[in-house]
Length: 200
Image (tube, helix red, strand yellow):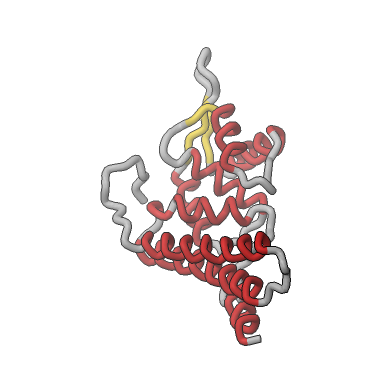
């Protein structure tokens, strides 16, 4: 019971800010894809479909709609210089919005866009200032710890007589512990190395 109570406390969000929606997750991905360099629209669509989580597979029409909305809001600029294909590039407002999305609470586990948001937050940490980066790492750590508590509870209370079921549950615990160790290591990763990371 103590583990379950701890899990409930871990899942509580102290922030009043709403969690990222599926549409915002796609915006985060599209802005993240274009943050380093301009890309052709078909290339952007292909990359997004490749990195999207299994539960979130946006169609070409959905991606086109999100690109159009980001352009209308001045967060992306799309230009076509014939005979080359149209390319999208991030704007200064787009970069600011991207950082805001990174600071927005992630959706709960089980949401179709949870895994995509988790991956993007981890991969785009270098776009954030030190304090914001530390806050996002803490958020990701809390997410993994809550999942680990649930996995440990499931493994410890498994009544299955199947050794394979027990091996599966034990593997989930080991994987989450390994993920937590990896996440803890991100705090020591330097962001001063040469890169295409845009300046504020």
